[in-house]
Image (cartoon, rainbow, N blue to C red; front, side):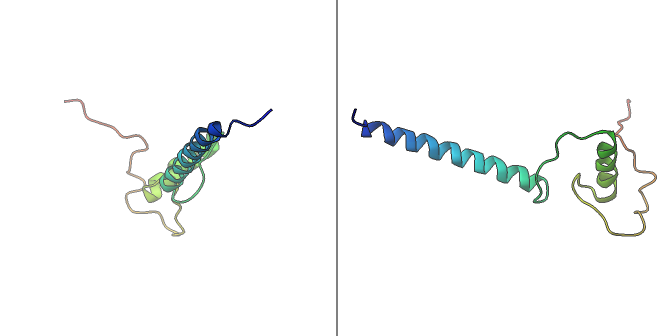
Length: 85
């Protein structure tokens, strides 16, 4: 049975578009995580460390090598609060 060569063109186009979409999705995820891959299956300890890193550096994937915490670390709220007028 002969191969229908006309069907290979749409197959190539679809494969290219899926490849481009997957690559762009991977690049945007890595750019939001400072060049690292995403975190999955976080337990309570990991979530607590992510919150601590965010409070120290201002980014959820940032880590600090400074031996002392910033001055406003203790007074910075863990959860953003908003006053009710």
